[in-house]
Length: 532
Image (cartoon, rainbow, N blue to C red; front, side, top):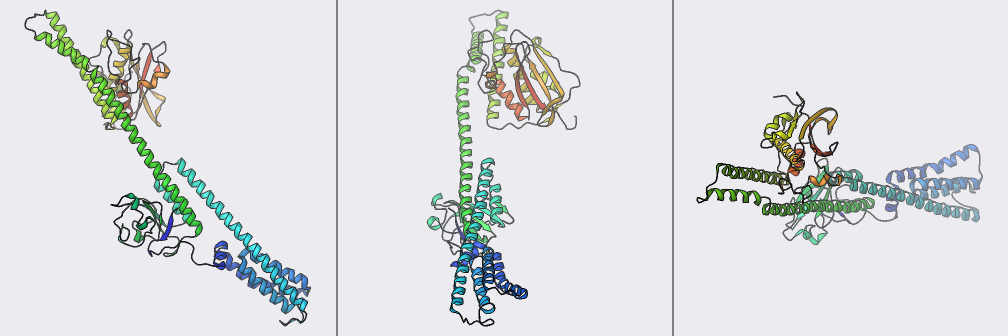
């Protein structure tokens, strides 16, 4: 529970100011209704006597019932003590105006005295019952409002992103204070001692940012309101949330006076919710850290596997060809030399491509990709993207004067190159067609966009395996072999293409090609800036 204390005075208070029945009644009914009840207690009994006198009606029993009704009405409005005043005043007026001898406070008949005493007792008893019932009703209404506020607050917390500023603004508005700040304390003795001496001390006046007589350092975590307090000395009130966190409050009751019991209960609940928010944020951060560590471990394991097999294959080819050419005792024909040199070149190109994808994937994983976006046409990146690929198997069917897209030239070239290379590998018996389209119905986050399609007529991919295609180090049927029985690539091409596409603000999707095969669709927003 949050312990609430006045911050500037440093004097702890554990409950509402004052004591006794009058104070309790005043707190239960409210000052304005108490004052109104007192006014009616003084005004209504004489008014009853004036009305019955003007009407010439002097029935003692009926007039007594009228005064009883006045006492009940005053009790319902102002509580017990105004009703007691109304009953005493009504008894006095009954004695003076209606009991013999009329016009005197003396009583001739003992039965009349007994009647007046019974009337006074009944009026006070009824007033007490009505006042208590009214007070209980008021407390129930406040408790209901408090429960509604806490329920609404808990729903907001569960459905929100856990913003501390939003939470503190809610606390400020519910308590009707000017400003609220959340401070976190750190101490050389450890976080358990950050709540001050004894762990439950108040934020009394002292050195800014420290507990009096301690080395605890306080830092502002979040705040809400106008000119929120940043030190304990600048706050009107302080609420210790737990051993580390404290709420500083400006406004509310005057400095040196505590909050009401209702507000203290709400502060205790707010403190519990606040701890829940902080723990939720810590859990989310911990989960994200664990996820990054897990992904990093998987990446390192996959890289080790790639290095142990896929990267060693082209190195072995280069070393074998070079060793063969360096043998002085063996003479190779010009055709054999050209074949060995071609092996070296192909293996070096393959090694360069594999290392490039590994480096690109590491950049994507480390969130260090910063695209330089500008207006580009799809056709602008094709010469570099298709370099080294079999031109006879690639059909470019891009329409002329196609609108430019918002992209990074280097990243877009890598995306297109990886997609085309992937299509050539898994559709070895068919051509790869490159098309693009834009216009109505093609949009990305509300912006007009363009699609670039890489269409092949290969074996296609099962719908259940589409998502796995974009994961690092995933190949279509890892046991499948292509390019003369050799495993081609290490499964990074589509992962790199997807990462670069998302970094440029686009999407990469896979669709089945009509008649069989796979179509990769790159969607990027159209360029809206000036043309070069």
